[in-house]
Structure formats: structure tokens, C-alpha cells
Length: 381
Image (cartoon, rainbow, N blue to C red; front, side, top):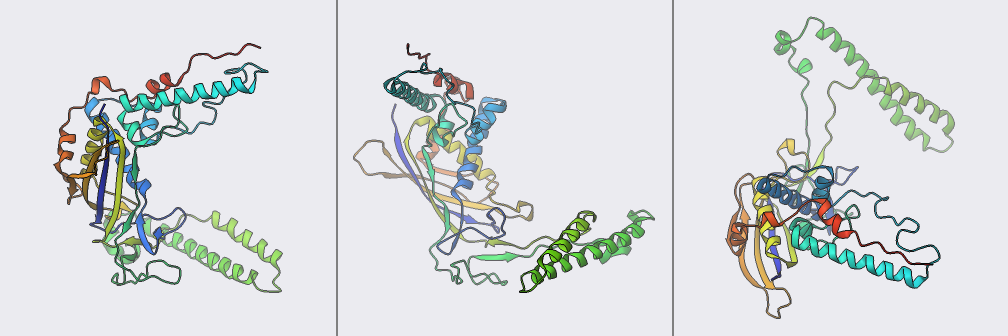
């Protein structure tokens, strides 16, 4: 079986604002003062597109284990794979016997990796985690997609300097808004609401005003609590009373939509990918994943705002694995329409056209789990 080392070098280009904020914050992730699209987002998108390609071409419908095995690499179940007393080594067995059992287990792990390479190119490419029969390392490595080498100005915290005009650097702040029709243009909705609507609306607005006043009082108390000499116990009690009162308040009519940071349209995000020891099946499935990615090249959050549309442009180079020859450029994968078709030039087009031996492949969890089960090993006392 011929194997290849494949390298893709290029970039994504933002066609609309892109936001990918860290959990619990509205800030863009930053490396060296430059915002970036995390590699996990790119790998995860490609993995799901590879999964979709498998389903489209085989007509398979995935059960619970198979879905999470292909999509996430398995479910982390700590009870799976735990050695029970006496399973592998009898009680009182020597350290030497335990070492032999561990070596046997490791050899079967290698068999699973070999089976994945032969029968399951998706797992071969993207790997599998603790929830799989054994941990399987990924062949595909993806770098973070980092805003290009333009020296964007940064603040004292080494973050992109952002201004409301969006011209200072590669990022901006978006200020979303929502409209309350009952307040803005009540005459326009009179014909579509009930007679009781405005009575209920005014009552709700009064309650909402009370809630706003309570929140302001809570903010004042928090500031007062930090001052020297403040009666912290008394303040804490009042804050607790306010929090309980706020829980009883109805949901606000017009929820505030928080500002968030975006990478501006037109920014180039440089990245690279590599696949070492790739088989022809690996390359064929990777090409199909890129084909489906180009048809829905949407990343990040707030996609209902039209965010996250990306173009892609990658130069592909290759060498035979283990060869002393230098890698050579063999083609390109690119797309400009985030809902269109990718252009495959050179070798990548051949990978896409390759007929995969679907009848000989097996993408199920059970197939690799069966390989992972070693014969019973018991050591006599």
C-alpha cells in the first residue's frame, strides 16, 4: 500500500464578518496580537464533512455509537476499558506477567490503528479519543488560521486595536439591536394585536422598569461593598433580596443583544495542514470533505447575522512517505463562493474522482471494537 505525505498551505479569506469568541467572553481569541480561527474549528468542520460524504455515498444511517465515533471520535466513558480484577492477570501474578499483559494490550492497539487505516479512512484521518476501542492518533494536522502578517496596531494588552469605524485594524465591534414595535410604531401593529395587548404591554413595561431599578441598586451596592467601613453583611443581605426579587420578574420584552468582536471582511487567515502516511483512501475522503466544505463554508458564531462566510485557497504538495525526494507541488484546492463548488487542480482532482472501495470499508464502531478485543489471557497462580 503506497503512502504519501501531503501538505496544504494557504489561507481562508473572510467574505463576511467572522466571530469565534472564547466561552464566557465576547472577545476574539488572539495570538501575538492577531485574531485567529482555532484549528479545532477547521478540523471539526472537515471531520463532519467527511462524515457527511460517507453517509451520502453509502446511504448509511448511523446509530448512537457510530454517530459519535465518526463525529467526535467516541464518547468519553471512563468505565469503558477499565481493567476489572482478574480480567487479564490472576490475583498474585508477578509484575512480569502484568508487563506481558500490557504489551499484549498495546499490540492489539496497534492492530486497531492498522485496521482503521485499512477499513475506516475517516478515523484514520481524524483519529479517535478515549471513547473509542483504543486512542487512535490523527493523521491530519491543522494549524490555527491566523490573520496575515500585516502589523495591526495593538493595545497595551497585545490585543488588536479596534475602533468603531472598523478601519483601525483587522477587527471591529458589532453593535446588534432589536426593535420593539409596540414602542416604536404602535399604530402599525394595531390591526394584528388583541384589545388587551396594550394593557398587558404597559403592565409588563412597568414591571420591567422595576427590574431595571433593582439591577441599578444591585450595582450600586456592589460598588459600596468594596469601600472601607461598609457593612458587608447588611449589603450582602440586600443584594440577596434583590436577586430573589429579580428571579420573580418576567422576561424582558426586548432582550439586550450584547456587542461582540468580529474579524473584518477581506482579512486573510493563513493556515496549513498536513497528512502524513496518507493512503489513497485517505486522500479520496479528504478531497470529498473539501468538496462539501466549499458548498457550506460557514464558520464561527452569530451565523444568523450573516457572519462566518469564508473563501479558501490552498496549494497542495506531496511526496512519497519515506522517500528522500523533496515534496513537489501537485495542485490546488480553492473556492470563492461559500455555497458553491471548489476548484480542484492537478492531483486533488484525481483524488476526488477516485472510486473508493465502499464495499470493502467499514465505518462502524463495532468493526474496530472487535479488532480491539484480545484473546483471553490468564496466568495461573
